[in-house]
Image (cartoon, rainbow, N blue to C red; front, top):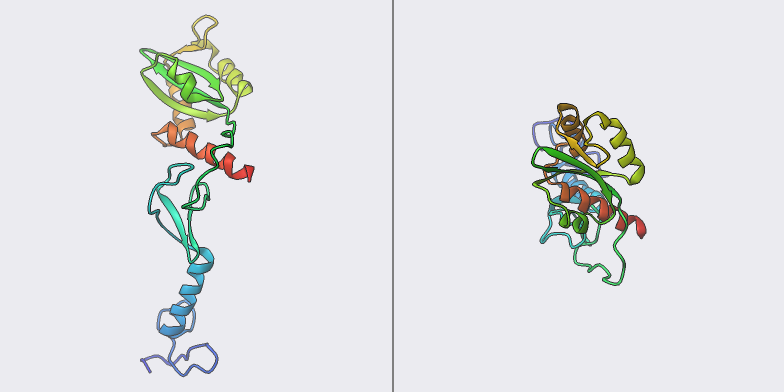
Length: 185
C-alpha cells in the first residue's frame, strides 16, 4: 500500500487509492476507467491522412476506427461520386485594387474563377437575401449600381468579423460543404 489511508473504491480491491486522483481508485482501476472512457468519447488526434470530404487533418480515434473531427466522416470511407455536391449559398467578399465586391453564389470556385480579383477576403453563409442586406448596409460606399464598394474601415471591420479569424476562406467553405453533406445522411 502507498502512503494514503484511502482504499480503492472498486469492489474487493485491497489497493490504496491514488493520491490526487479525481476518484478514489488505485492505479490499475484508474487505467481501466481511462481506457473505457477513450472507447466511449474517443481521443482527438491527427488523422492518418486528410479527410476525403472536408480535408481536415483532425480526427477522433475510437476503438473501431477514426472519424473526422470536423465533418464526422468515417476515415477510410470513400464519398459516393454519384452524389451531387450539396448546395451551400455564400456571400463572397473579394478585393480588386482599391475596391471590394460583395456578391453571392452557390458555386464559388466557378464564380470566382471568372472574376478578376486580387484577394478573396471572406465567405459569409447566405444567399441573395444576405447579399442584398449587405448592399444596403454599405450603400454609402457603393459605386453606382454595381456590386463594387469603396474600401472603408466599416466594411473592412465587417469582413474581419465575417472571417472570424480564419485566414483561409476556402477552409470555411469546405467545412460548410462537409456539414451539409453530413446532414444529408
